[in-house]
Length: 84
Image 1: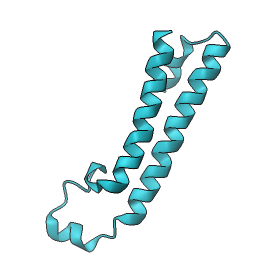
Image 2: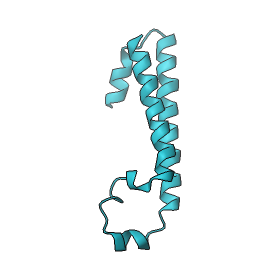
Image 3: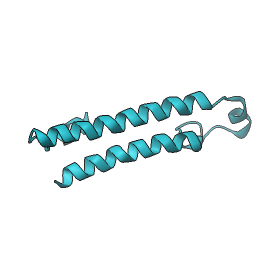
């Protein structure tokens, strides 16, 4: 049961990070290491929207997948899928 709670929490974390990336684009890897003058040249809005979409989809896949594994009685297989 603790594994299911962990996987659901992980999925919710990805979804939360997806929404936070739009508000705080410094969470995007690589963007926060650019100098200020280069960051000013980049239109970051499309990248944040893309990152949000990907993070929400990943979180939803983790949650739905863990629930399906739990229903099927294969919760231990979740570790194998997360490691791949």
